[in-house]
Length: 86
Picture (cartoon, rainbow, N blue to C red):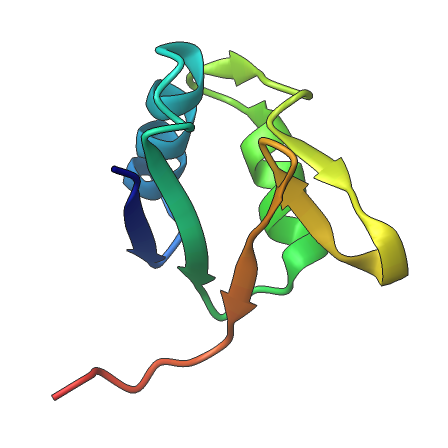
């Protein structure tokens, strides 16, 4: 069974969780499907790849077709919303 994960705000903790899942080989069991942040995807990928605290992780995201990004060869959607779900 695969769990689907949404990350609200891709700051230091969100990037750390994603990196920990990747380094421990858990991306097959826990699949991040949505990242919600006000920044655009290009900046979020750059921050994930070049983290000043945890170091480089340039293999985390791959460039997909039509300018999208892939995480562990799976599409990851991005939402630019600051509205909280009720």
